[in-house]
Image 1 (cartoon, one colour):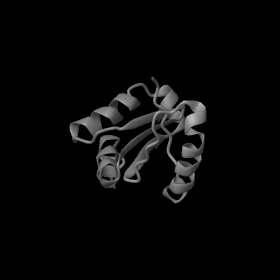
Image 2 (tube, rainbow, N blue to C red; image 1 turned 135 degrees about the horizontal axis):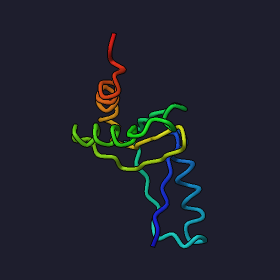
Image 3 (tube, rainbow, N blue to C red; image 1 turned 120 degrees about the vertical axis):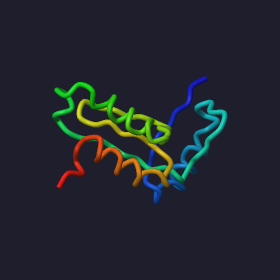
Length: 104
């Protein structure tokens, strides 16, 4: 069995859920679920290709602060983590500090 997960803007959630429900039987999906209480934090930059340890520092920072990562998406210049919506602002503050972006 395989799970397929994706994110959409909250304003598109009802339409996306309806579309998934319409094709559920056709694609053999057991269930369709949604969660409107998530948020995303991302690190983006071309320099990530040449900076080993960026991903590890992001994951360690979130872990050390008790922030659970529910989904991860990556590309060569972006790492995105889906979290509980109420933890996003806190995650951003911790990540800013960890990457030295909070300095004046």
